[in-house]
Length: 336
Image 1 (tube, rainbow, N blue to C red):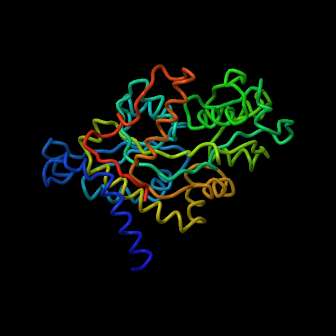
Image 2: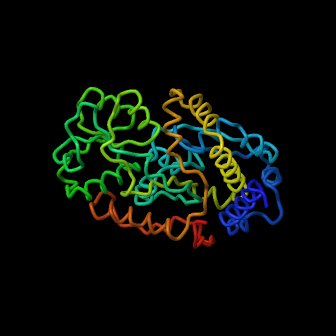
Image 3: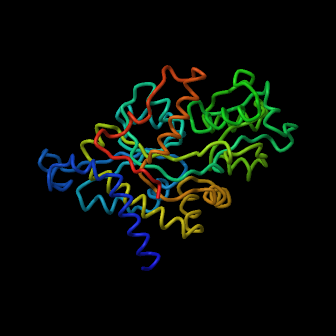
C-alpha cells in the first residue's frame, strides 16, 4: 500500500468516526441540495468563523471547499474573528454555524449556556502559544511574574496556559495582575511597556518574536496540550451533518496537503493574514496537522481545563464537557 493510499484510508476512517452517528439524522438517502429544494430554498449555506491561524485559514485560501459544496448547492460564507471567545459568541447568537478555537473558549461558552457541540480537533500543539516578555526585560523565570501585569485575551487558550505556568512556578493567580485585552490592543500595550508580559498564540506570537524581538519566557510544552477544536451550533449540526462531513473532509485534505508543503502554506497564510512570510512560516512550523474525532482522552483533557477555571471561579458554574457532544455520537476510544 502506498503512503498516499494509506493517508486516504486513514482520512476516510477518521471522518467515518466523526459523523457516522450524525449522518443517521439526515433525511434518508436525500442529498444536501435535494433537502434545500424540498424546503423551497435555492441554496443552503454554511457560515464559517475563522481566525488568523490554522487549517481553516488554509482552507479559505485554497478555495477547495467552495468548489466541493457548490456541487451540492451549498454556499460558504467566511467571517474572521480576532479570538476564540468572540467567535463562539457569534456561534451562540447564530451569526456563524461552524468554527475553530483553542481549549479555553468552549469552556467559557458552555458555562455561559452556549448551545454548541464539538465535532473534531487537531492534534496538540503546545509550542503554538507562549508567555513572552520584551527583549530587554529583566524577567527570567515564571516565578518572576509575581506581582506583574500580564496581557491576555480573557477566556482564550492562553488563559489556561497562564494558569498552568503560574501553578508550575508556585505563584497564585491572585498574585499577578491580568490585563484582559484582545491581541491587537495587547500588542500595543506590550510595545509601549504598559504590561510586563503577554500571553499570546500564533501567528501573533511569531509576529512578536520576529518584529519586536520578544523573548519567550515559557511556551506550552510540558504545561498544556493546546488542542484546536472544531465546533458547530448544535442545531446546525443536527440539521446538516452531511454539510459538516464535507467540511471536515476538506479540512482533512488540507491537513494532508499542508503537512507536506510548508512553503506553499506560508505563501497562502501570508496572503490571507497580511503578515510577512517569515512570520507565518515560523507559526506554521509549530502547527499540528491531522483532524481527528474528539476522543475520550481529549474530552478528559478538556474537563481538566474546565475544572481549573471552575476552581478559580473564572466561570460561573462547573460544567460537564461531554454534555457538549452530539447525543447520538460514539466517542472514539483512540486518537489513532
